Length: 94
Image 1 (cartoon, rainbow, N blue to C red):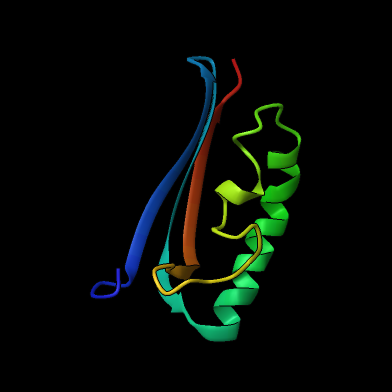
Image 2 (image 1 turned 180 degrees about the vertical axis):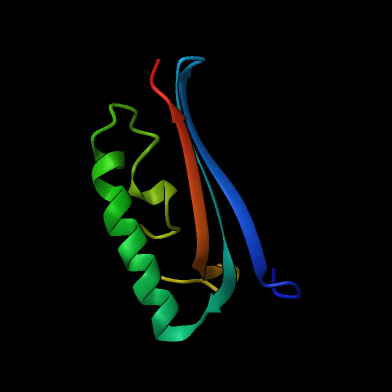
């Protein structure tokens, strides 16, 4: 994505053949660094923490999201933002 920052991706939620949602979005990739990357990682961790904390599986805790259980951005971590320029969706509710 660094070499070709224009991106397109699809997200689906499928319960069965009569109940599904699909969204296709396109936009521009931006790699974040420094304080901006740390802030973005903190936002992501804070958003995921309630979901992870509510699981009964002890292997799925905040430590599985980040190496130290916080929003530290290590040298091998890539944090990025997708600036959406277009999106479309479809759904079926039975």
